[in-house]
Length: 133
Image (cartoon, rainbow, N blue to C red):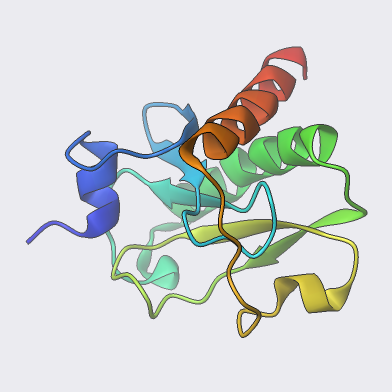
């Protein structure tokens, strides 16, 4: 059975897409720690990030780097935190979280709630910065 992320990539489940290319896909986390919290996934479904071959893993990191730069340009923050947890969805993924302190990337924090319009606005802000980078 396809993972929830594969279903998002295939358009079966809606998302707030930030970017994609032929191998990777980035979209806003719908249970974010901070505004702009983005998930980056390979389009090829692999459960564990370290099971990706070297090319796939390097590509995922480089794609994430572009997305992180756009998030940082769009959302006021000191840095973009990077987390690879890998237990919640059986599909390799990277969390990119705008942060001003270490506490901003604490996954025990309450998740923020945004309206659909707020998510759309955030995704557009990040996309606009991707174009200008």
